[in-house]
Image (tube, rainbow, N blue to C red; front, side, top):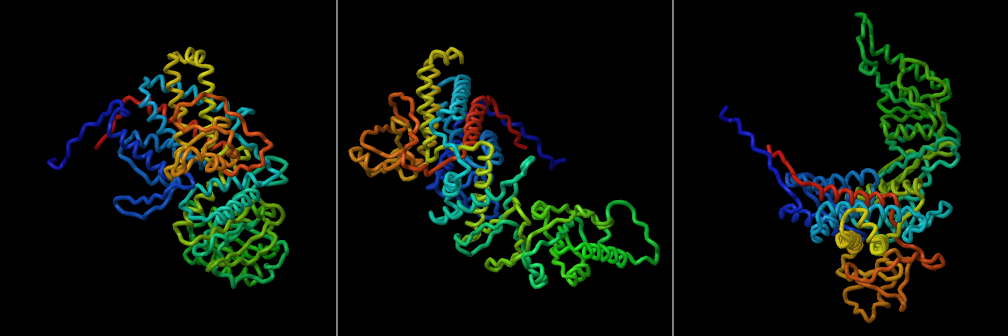
Length: 567
């Protein structure tokens, strides 16, 4: 009993946003995330203090998952952002930085917390209505007849992840491959409910990025390539059968229940005879490709190969699902009954592909299929791992356009445009809005100013070269002025805005971000412009990120006590 430690009382922290230690940690987290934000963001190397591998990344999902904190208040924000990223795969850093900046602005404004919450909620509603409306000036409609906007959207996602270490031609090549893979997974001739296909990724280390490619169909590792039947490598339709059950001949694979055996029974021979009967049936049915998710008995393999059947074993459950969709076959889950005719499928042909040390069997679909394989090449394992994560995120972002075929202007322009719109609307409707929310006009305008400054701060976080962040007083797009340029030569140094759609001209007026300037209604960019948008953000991801950031900030502002068990 002397070794029993007395239970420690729980620690209670009241008003966590007034706690200096928590505020310092929030500020540090914000600085960390800002330093990773955008194409010019800095890499972070994360290493657990008790050991483990070193992770190099600037991707929010990897970064926030690897970070841990003993402070529940910080974990609340971190978990909320990770939940958004798990659903939408983009705008994680935008969400986290905006949430932390809203908390910072609410504290600096001196407003009562309940007033900050109701004003933030009201302004979020205005933003959502504007972004979803027909007259939104920062939204671009996507045309599925042209791939240009899709390549721009993919390039914006890929180029914003510096841990991939890609040159511009390499980033553009991967962007085109991502769009190609996305289009291959969208079925064309479905009359009923459309079922999206799948892109499988195969990583090849040590080869140039420009060697990466996309192939329709499935590529699987084939170490026993010398066992392939040459007849099955010609361009002819091949009958295919898939087995999800093990064909290794083990008793444990027979299922649950008791097994009664006679004393002189030879179970191994009986099971082998049953496997060979199965082999005879598939040969009689004209099967050319025999695939098993698990292990196949060596004797059955030898028999099938002797009958000119190509055999693939240990395919795995993930590839099995894709091959089933590609071939139109139903995986057989037992070897105790005859294979029904509807279980068979077809593939067009088999070819052999060589990628470095990898020898792969290319299974071509018979007719249209929504399954494809992306071969990703890079110089080392760290860059390749990051590139694989980014390509998966890009695929998800492109798929979101099927739900909402539009995108938002990137490069900080949506944030500054939205801030100018909210400022103008709040000043025009201050009397009605303040009365509706039950606060004074001064409180409402203070809350709105903090909200707009938070949006502008996210745009300014894209600059990592200590330049000056500006917005024009016509379209309210985002501009960056290099630190060594004086204001007299501003027009010649600005070039184009963050998204690339607005060009600098002598008649244009600018103002520095987060400064007082006359309110105005931002005008949409005329459709006759000769410039093409260079940076796009996912509409669905960014709208969700905006909602999660504001709602999480409101939740954090509403926390009165934190009770933490220290045992």
